[in-house]
Image (tube, rainbow, N blue to C red; front, side, top):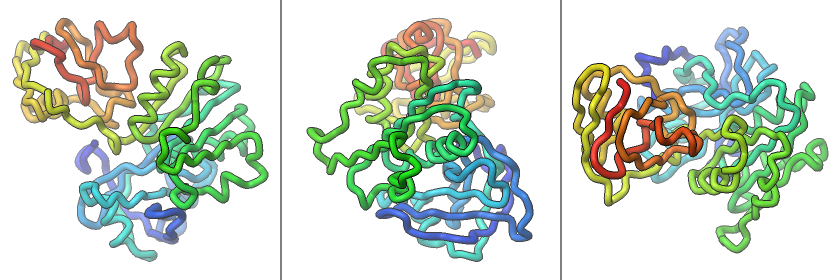
Length: 322
């Protein structure tokens, strides 16, 4: 995740705050002087510094045509690292939050006439901005499948169940029962020239990735901001990475990513999501056996590329074009 040194932050006023579902809070941010905010595109997010100093990314969920406010929804993660708890518990209407300008690692492709959207839980937030944009502009046909556990855990449920979205939005609750999970195969079996956008828990995204393997890789897009970043596995082992261009050799501990190890050794490497969904840290692989843990690379790309934020050596060591 970019640090505040990489992402300049400016204060915005919290002008409204409300709990819109169980442990999910909607915050509306605006300039204190009421002036226009930097524009954003559907799927964009903000970096927000919580009152306790931790920085987190939150999707913008309002219509990008609005220039007077940013709207985000924050899920209070009781077992998280404390960033969302601080935003929800310590932020008051009238207070300021330090916020970055919008950035988009999950943009809508231009000139696509038909869009399929799949959201799980709080992953609906960037999707909501997309459908608001598509609805207001008529830029493309769309269908949203929104999957949650219970009705009271479903953010923006009343809005998305409104008559204006009849035939365009399907809301499904599985009540925590795997037998009641929505079967997405009929939805994904035929690409039909569509682009697919999916945001939600990693198990959902991995299932969607598996079922859309026959789609063009350019037509499948994922986002999760690292909230469901794959954990290190108990069987992970240390290995080394040889940097072909610089000639260095970096040791990668069992519980450290390649990306973090490179940075710890003074190498400046671009990244964004750090969860294997945005593609920013894709690196040329010269040689080595890779355990690919990303949701970005198509099968034909895996022999010569690696996402260094999450993937590791499957055995032996790696040589990278760095």
